[in-house]
Length: 457
Ligand SMILES: [Zn+2]
Image (cartoon, rainbow, N blue to C red; front, side, top):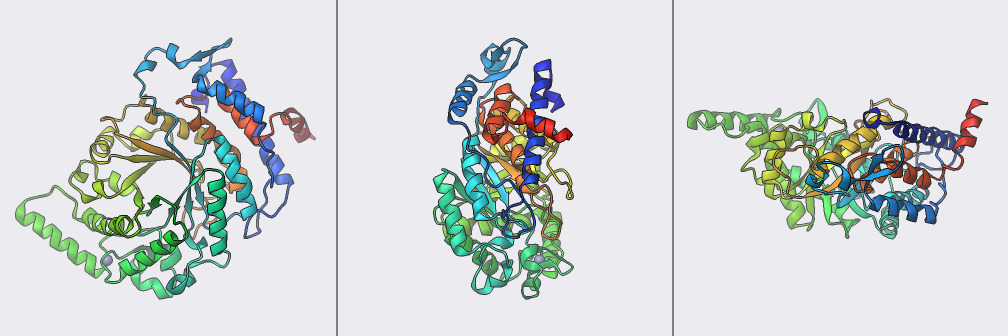
């Protein structure tokens, strides 16, 4: 956040935000209550509703697109040199909050408070990653954890989301990160590598039966959803089994014989499976499939001509503030020329180490601000992206199925609300009104001085 501190007033804002986070953490630590279905943790159960008058004032201020503080008065973006060159794709069409439920599914009473809060802060969708917290049935019944949601719980989550005007985008893994399925003996034969339970073998003769069962069960409990995130990130073990390695060798041989090396044979195995799943999602479920982009990113220009470009919408994820280093201009150029719609993702929690206790708010702010600069067109991305569909604020609960929990959701609510206030502010720079909005929504601004004095005792 120091990157954005350019004046005394900014430092004051930084101090205010830091104080808010401290006060909030003290508050949640003081209240042990039933928040989780797995009752291990605590959280503030009922954040006070935001003051309506303050919210209205903040919205009015944000509509004026303030970009900073000169020391005496705010300066509108129109007065900044070069501002007219911005694309003004802000706020993003979709402001999505990612709920990673693995290992820590909140109780419905917690979500009943959280949903209106994030909606007030500007969210209009939730990306729900159930993993083993979904109530799978029939052949998949053993996949569900013992503290998984019930069918009626999921229906209630849909109702609560609709009440807060939050569109639900379910996420179900269909290639990698299927540890929650492949760890079970009854599904181990689907593994690409018998030693690793991460990926299914895309050439296993019955793998699509398994994937179809997974996605159709999730679809059945989300009949209103338009998008389905099908994962497909970090598929590290490709072409390791006998079937896939034989296909790889044949493909490599074919390339040598014809002297054609335009595509990566290993990636083609990945792409063929994703395409099968994407067609299933589009044709049989009537949904638009989204995938994480990291496997595509490695291909860059070699993606041209891939059938995936007509089947999926990529979600480009980077959780640092140097996005253009990790997604260079030539990747943006490829993406922009091939995908009509692109999602992007920052992180409000769960990206600072797998044993971190609370989010590093400074780094999380810098991450979201960096994405907002990309969306605004202020940061160069090469060829102009036709349509940024939206910004997803990811909130990782653990780094994979077997990892410990990190940065629990209740302790990360200030970081989440701050990120949403930034995304919803309509500009790519941190402002005083964002801080004021965050303080107002968290309901702890008036108590800040009192609580700070309490901390010293
Ligand atoms: Zn295989």
